[in-house]
Amino acid sequence: QVQLVESGGGLVQAGGSLRLACAASGRTFSSYAIGWFRQTPVKEREFVAAMSWSGGGSYYADSVKGRFTISRDNAKNTVYLQMNSLQPEDTAVYYCAGRNRPRSALVAASYEYWGQGTQVTVSS
Image (cartoon, rainbow, N blue to C red):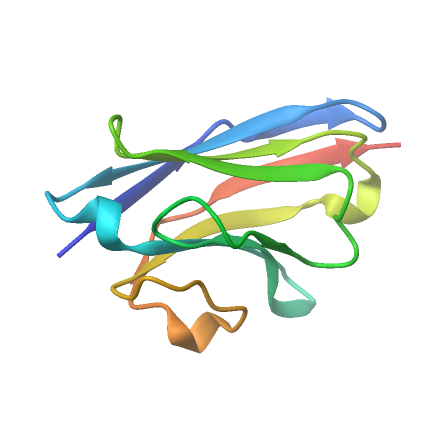
């Protein structure tokens, strides 16, 4: 079993950057694929980025491609989401998610474990 805790959210101006972190507990974290999702009060939870257990096979939503980067440090049991060139439409609660599979997935229902979320607000 894996428990996930996000951090790093906050308020930033458009064009700014934030780095989210997702700290995982559990000895088998390195075998889990990880995803980042986001949700607003008016939109369903949407896929942002995902990475396989090995650190390869990264995928991004078209809306964040070229601006966001997902990475993981299995030695630290931590996954990161570097977010650059942030825009107001990136405002959302961001969640990290884990699945006990080597390959990542782009659908929220494919993930078994979720963090509590961290708020990202981008002002114009």
